[in-house]
Length: 236
Image 1 (cartoon, one colour):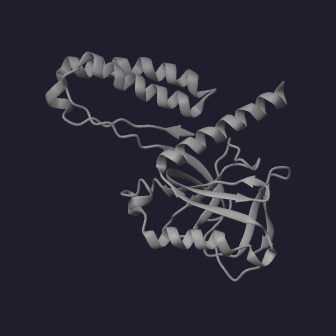
Image 2 (cartoon, rainbow, N blue to C red):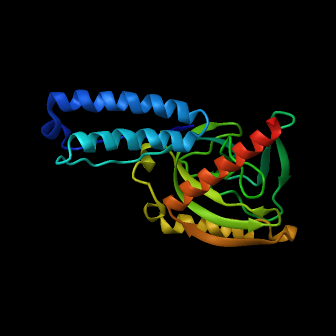
């Protein structure tokens, strides 16, 4: 699920009562269009609503100034809480979370690890999600998160990119919106974990480093498209 919000500054001075009315009318129309699109294209539909509202405002009030912030929220599902060596996975066939294995190496997951529903990564599994939290959660915990970065990763199954995110409901991460606002040492810890966690299992992998928020959003859109294509082929 995806939510986008618009925040305008200097609105009261620039728009006046008629401006508010026109802005909200445009928003209502765009929201209706976005609702239809979102049923089939979640990311593009919601983004289209925001673009339509913003565009309508700028057409009606070309000389006024508006600052637009895109605060993107996704719904993630946690499989593995931080500070554990247990590799827990959701079993789609059984509809339960099961213990896949305990890591061979003497390392613990440094962040919450899970997936984004209704998505497919390059390896054919749901897109991996990393969540920075103040406290560990639990398998099956549903969290509203904000994506901030992408960790490029490839293993024996194919491309396995991981989306780094923060919980929207935790004020401690309110200022975190991109990799530059994450502590550099935290990013190094996460990289080091994925570089070494399966070393004793003799599994080959390639770590490609961090990319910004834009790359993360592009990967999420690709994962959604893969999922929709798979669903269409399954139905048709």
